[in-house]
Amino acid sequence: MSEKLVIRGGRKLAGTISVDGAKNSAVALIPAAILAESEVVLEGLPEISDVFTLYNIIGELGGNVQFDKNKAIIDPSHLTAMPLPNGNVKKLRASYYLMGAMLGRFKKAVVGLPGGCYLGPRPIDQHIKGFEALGAKVTNEQGAIYLRADELRGARIYLDVVSVGATINIMLAAVRAKGKTVIENAAKEPEIIDVATLLNNMGANIKGVGTDTIRIQGVEHLHGCHHTIIPDRIEAGTYMVLAAACSSEQGIRIENIIPDHIEGIHAKLSEMGVPMQLEDDAVVVGGAVDYKKVDIKTYAYPGFPTDLQQPLTALLTQAEGNSVVTDTIYPSRFKHIAELGRMGGQFKLEGRSAVVLGKTDLQGAKVTATDLRAGAALVIAGLLANGTTEIFGVEHIERGYSKIIEKLTSIGAEIAKVSEEETFVS
Ligand code: EPU
Image (cartoon, rainbow, N blue to C red; front, top):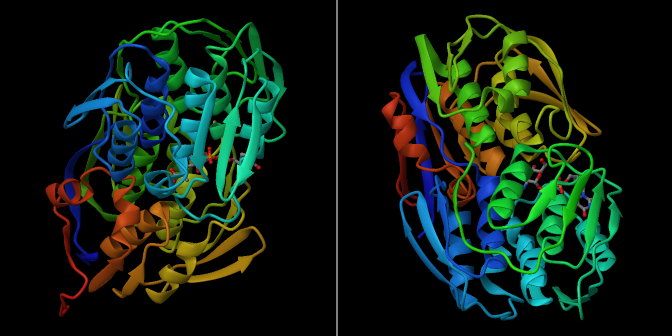
């Protein structure tokens, strides 16, 4: 049965929210476990549907996953290179990591082209270029990618675009290749460092992660280990924006953060005039009375993250004057604009930019989360708005935000998940 979120807006919120493990690390760490030949224990995983889907996929491949809350014990010793042309792999974008991981372990893989959020075209040509450079033959047959190699040999790979997915996928395929691989123009996101940390603890030899050039010396075997995931900087950033929008004077404390990872959003909220206090692993965010307009341009890390562009747009409707949001990573990641428009937001779309015309009063409405971060933007708008907002497409939000209803209820929000058929009077 389909469900929707119902939010009664306009309340001031206060309290503490704890951030969970990073979705975009988790969805790579679980496939990375395939490369080991004994048990991998992952701690701090977020309880989100993308993670549960990956557990199911590991099970389909013959692996054993035992999980309890945030901890998973993955035994990949009996895995086989079972083809995965359809089914669960279509549910998430990150199923492309199964390509690199299975290629690395079995020298072959069949993986259906990934699903996930539609943010405009999301090619994987750089992943494939990397696999081919390592010696794999890659073909696309009826919507599934077939990869085969007699052996994988280290290579020098220059990425034409800075890509998180391609950087991680090539690392996964290269850690057990013969000889040395160099990835040039690599992405530098913290999630990449997290995956490399896991692989190195499994016995891999990866150097230079977090810089443009990653060097990998292949090893023959990888073994199990214990690893604790990094906190989710996008979840943290989303709650910072939400707190900036709805916090009472007392502020909302967001715990389990790495301050370096949230610099972009911290800087922009500061420019908007939002009061914040940074601690070693927490930030307290208060609501501002008058928000200043700011312009945003998304870039690869450490630039401002594309994933926070949508949530921040909801807050920018409250700033005096016009703010320009430009997404250089996904120029058409603006599906949330039409939905925020239903709530009274005013925007102009100009090429790869959205101009947010402020300040507007938001009103509750029936809206649809077209993708994960659009959903986060609508939750923030719903909390800000007068009246009741109903958000359809909850499954997108649940792919990436662990226990969002519990977390928001605990700081005083009126939010519930109900069946789509239920009606509400505001
Ligand atoms: N690109 C190519 N060719 C490729 C790969 C990427 O042209 O082979 C382009 C993309 O079209 C895009 C840019 O390069 O314009 C960067 O894409 P990237 O590969 O870095 O993105 P991704 O790995 O597919 C991850 C996150 C996204 C996040 C982006 C950018 C995961 C599973 N997804 O996607 O997260 O927006 O990096 O930081 O890690 C989200 O969490 O909501 C989300 C969409």
